[in-house]
Image (cartoon, rainbow, N blue to C red; front, side, top):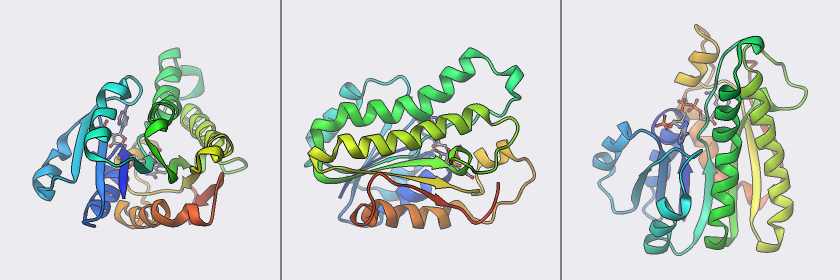
Length: 229
Ligand SMILES: NC(=O)c1ccc[n+]([C@@H]2O[C@H](COP(=O)([O-])OP(=O)(O)OC[C@H]3O[C@@H](n4cnc5c(N)ncnc54)[C@H](OP(=O)(O)O)[C@@H]3O)[C@@H](O)[C@H]2O)c1
């Protein structure tokens, strides 16, 4: 499988990338702003792994990703839009920049990535967007997370609309609305809270779903949560 995953420098995305690359049949392009995990390059020491250091809200994918796709991939089979940011601030203190950053990274980045890569996405491919229970309609909401939750809600609906519009290309799109997983992001949202899941455990589910979920679901927003938050 030829796979693109965003936000694989830490947290859940890092664990998903590690699991995917362990299979010799997979080639992976990882996109993140930092490259701490370039240790991964040493760890994996494989020509099947490519890191693109980029901000998904600003990068021009035609320059940064498409050349690698053309050289190394015979089309794209899976895109996992995992990168995200969480701004934890009371509603009254949120700025326009906070709004732009939240929506540019959590919604516009995935939108642009898929739109620009579309000519290179294979028939039968799966686009998997990682959203949050915070952005799941009717779920519990928490102070400080207005922009995070609303941007994740937007990404969830984008997953539904992409499924509809990409039908003609034979491409499926789903969203997983994750519950609490013990990462830096969770610690920022809920300091001191202990999540019931570690990144590796959630990564196992995401990897399996990315590989096979589209055989059973299309245009779905699935809650993956055993606790609130
Ligand atoms: N942890 C949870 O409880 C939880 C719950 C629900 C949903 N989620 C979702 O799961 C996903 C992963 O979360 P996590 O907890 O693993 O978070 P995390 O540990 O904070 O990791 C976030 C990842 O996103 C990348 N990223 C952020 N902004 C980026 C940008 N502008 N361009 C490229 N990459 C960017 C980060 O890399 P760089 O900093 O290197 O760019 C990092 O690799 C997120 O979408 C999050 O909303 C998490």
